[in-house]
Structures are given as C-alpha cells and as structure tokens.
Length: 166
View (cartoon, rainbow, N blue to C red):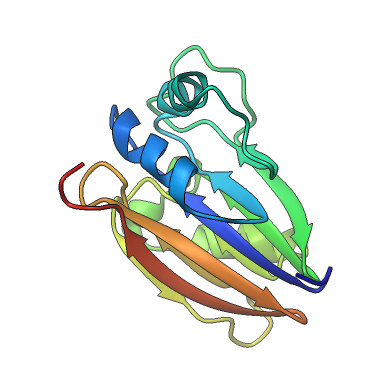
C-alpha cells in the first residue's frame, strides 16, 4: 500500500471475548488497529496467547470497564492523510447520541471520530465541517468490528463479523 492508502481495524467492547479477538488478530491484515476500550485485559491476553505482536501499531484507550488500566481516555493519530480522534465514548455521553463526541473531534481538528461504548454500529457521515463519526459495534455482543479503508484522504467505512462459531 502507498503511504496515502491504508486499512484500519476498529474494535470495541470485547468484554471477555478473547477468542474472538485472537481470531481477528490472526486473520485480518491491517496497517493499524484502534482498540476503543472495555476489554484491554482481553487485548493483552490475546496478544500473549497468540505469542505475537501484530506487524502494525495498536492504538488503545480505556473504557469505563477497564478498571486499573492507565491507558489514555482518548488520542489522535494520522493515517493516509486523515486525522483520527479515538475514544471509548462514555465521557461524551454517546448513549444519548454522537453530537458531543463529534464536537470533541472537531475541536481537535479530526477528520474522523472513532468511538465505542454503545455496543451499536453507527456511521454519521462528515457534514458541514464536522468529522465523520464511526462506531464498530461490540465484538462481544455481535462479533462486529469496523474496517476503515483510507485512500488519498477519503474513507470508506464498513463492518465485518468474526465467525459465529467463536
């Protein structure tokens, strides 16, 4: 892939589903992974059990259930000419809607906001100077995770699922 083209995996809310996370790490190719919280223990265990560190960076934030973890609540990362703001979402009241987290992303100059916490897939396209807002859903509840394809500063968002047998 060229520097202006990349594939990003987005995962949130694993809540104990280490096997699903292990499968994802073993079977999905990517240039980066954003882990949006509520399962940092699962992520650590999956990496240990797989006896590998993926060949791409993992950006991680803690969620409201990641007790004892010192990971940040949010972060910024650029890929393919796009600036991503990522957070779990609980500090922005996302269960009542994505407006506050979208505004937080806009205030940081982000093109895309990634969040979890609600366990529901959601995509709000970028409009009128506001960033696109994307939620991958819950790896625990539905086996859902997000895939963002970035090409020359434009994003295509989608969802995939791990096999139902996991």
